[in-house]
Amino acid sequence: MALWGGRFAAGSSNMFRQVNDSLPFDRVMAAQDIQGSIIWSRGLKKAGVLSEDEQSQLEAALSELKALAEKGELDFDASPEEDIHSFVEAALIDKLGDIGRKLHTGRSRNDQVATDFRLWVREHVDSLKADLKALIRALLQTASRHQQAIIPGYTHLQRAQPIHFAHWCLAYVEMFKRDLSRMKDLKARMNQCPLGSGALAGTTYPVDRDMLANELGFNSPCLNSLDAVSDRDFVLELLFCASTSMMHISRMAEDLIFYNSGEAGFLQLGDSVTSGSSLMPQKKNPDALELMRGKCGRVFGSLQGLLVTMKGLPLAYNKDMQEDKEGAIDTVNQWHICLCIAVEVLDSLSLNEERCREAAAQGYANATELADYLVEKGIPFRTGHDIAGKVVLAGIEKGCAIEDLPLADMQAICDKIEDDVYPVLQLEYGVNKRNILGGTSYETVTKALYTELENLDKL
Ligand code: ARG
Image (tube, rainbow, N blue to C red; front, side, top):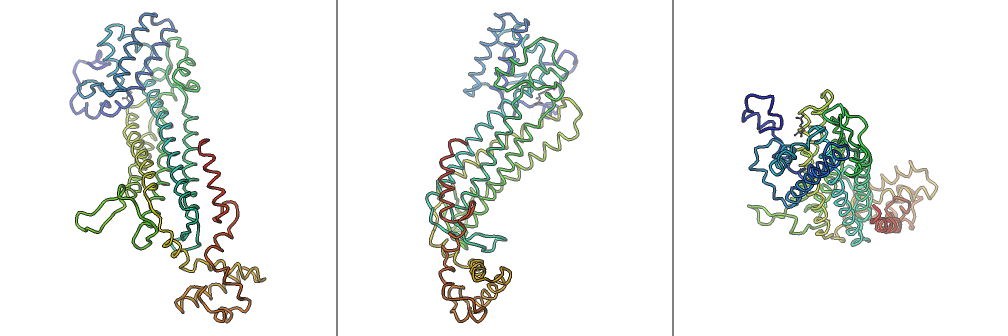
């Protein structure tokens, strides 16, 4: 029997149940729903609605249910109830009879679901923060394993300037640190308690809303009942944090897929995160990385989906809002899996430092060094740029690198070029000359790496 059956002469159609029921997915909030109810029962006791004995019976029964929920022993599949809220209330009435029927006094499923979902999101913010931290740690460890390695740096996917591999790792550390701080912001903003807002207008019972908020670990109660029951910003923000972070994960995956390609050959991935081909025996495909990239589609879709769902809704609660859950639950799962598999990929990869170095030295990636060398000889940079371009052209015509051109060839282009140009054209020279905060020199990168390692526990 539905919670709201009194006014209805006929039951729901099967098709209506399919569109309306949320128990198949909102069961994930069972523990939060029960915890919310325990605290609500305390609020009702303090407001003089429940006697001490009634409240303690309710709390004992709810605690038993919570233990079952945590062990995964609640039988949702056999239940005729429409959502997690009616499921818990029905179970309580089953155990306690009329006392169970008192729990929903002064409460609505509207403030209840808003509270439950905030609790659920808050818990996952914490666990996802831990996942992000683990990924940052893995990147730092990967950088530490290859502190000397130099790879080509790209713009437009053309070799641009050589960089330390650790510098590449630290670039992603910055991105995941921002993701982490966005999650902290989200938590601070969302940590307000809707309970006591009733259906939309507040409740008539004198519950202590500060106490409710406090006992559920919120910083304060929500300040407006209409907003409290109809606000889903906290879900949107979570989806935005996830989308941005998945975009970072995806870019990292894309870099690694390229580095792993036969054409680049910079690294190899472990067997544990790759798969073979059913037809081509030689293949070892970077599936984990491709899926990290591919799963962005559904995550971005969930953000877009909820924005569209919310945009036309009049205040206050509308059933459209039940659509907030499946996308968020899926997103949290996928983001978690991707963060974890990213760690496994990094732990498993082996960098071919020699091949990286070889590639970094090719592609005229030291042309900027030549232009800067000419600047030191008193030539304006724009002129130096032009001369260096002509030297590159000479190299291309001869089929060799700049540093392999005879001095006479270079001097034919510019007589300011002397024998002392050759050390400048060496790979490490250009890399280590970028010895500036945020740059790619060995010294700066090593310093940055140690700073990040030191700060890891404070994240
Ligand atoms: N299952 C509903 C949801 O997720 C709970 C709230 C129902 N409220 C209502 N007024 N029908 O949004």
